[in-house]
Amino acid sequence: MPSLSLPPTITISTRSLLLFPAAATAAAVLLLLRRRRSSGYGVAARLCEPCEPAEGEAVTAGGKRPLPEALTPSSSPGVRLTPRRALLGGGSPREIGLSKDVDATTKRENTIDWHDYFMSVAMLSAFRSKDPNKQVGACIVDPKRQRIVGIGYNGFPWGCSDDDLPWARTGTSKLETKHLYVCHAEMNAIFNKNCSSLEGCRIYTTLFPCNECTKMIVQSRLLDVVYLSDEKHDELSTVASRRMLKLAGIPFWEHKPASPRIVIDFESELAR
Ligand SMILES: [Zn+2]
Image 1 (cartoon, protein in one colour):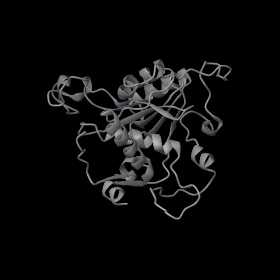
Image 2: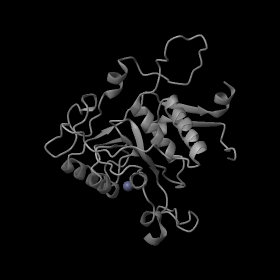
Image 3: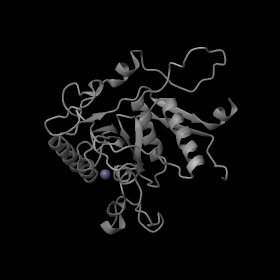
């Protein structure tokens, strides 16, 4: 296996992208690199069993699996949930990083929670996008097992060269813009699934899904949608997405990362 050529440091600022705790992406990097080294495929995720509701498991009137109590919306879909503190047992927002304490005799406490972890994987996937204007990532998770079952970022369809299709947002002809060709992150994450069904799975996406991706989310019977940015909240596509999600009984909620900024420092990790 040839060695990987990696940038020594990746800095993600949440001021522009609403990012996450340090260990989230660091852990994601390590996870992805480990898988890449072992499988030769950078974003291969662990195989899982089909996400079917367990026998006797409660479902809502619409046949949807209800959210765990810690993730239940406080009022209506779209309202920020408060799972982090509940999951971690309290504490103020803080930086989370890797550590090395050779004298420690007890377990490490300042680990990353699952929501930051999966959203960080989604964001890290966005780093792969060739889109010069907008990079979006998505990560689909089986929440019962906390396993990643699909990852994607926005790009052109398989076999279509990044150099042969237009990346422009506007042009004299719509045929010469990216919009008719690009596959969004959510779509790719769904197509990249490594289990037979995504029913009951959760999608983390760095941008509120468009109407086309929302159709696929609904048809895939996903449990809920966790988004980071809602910058296109007032666009018709997003309005249509919310309309469909509400009608389908699929909750969506904003992820609030605990830390405003993360740094992945390969050099420091290698030097520890
Ligand atoms: Zn989309």
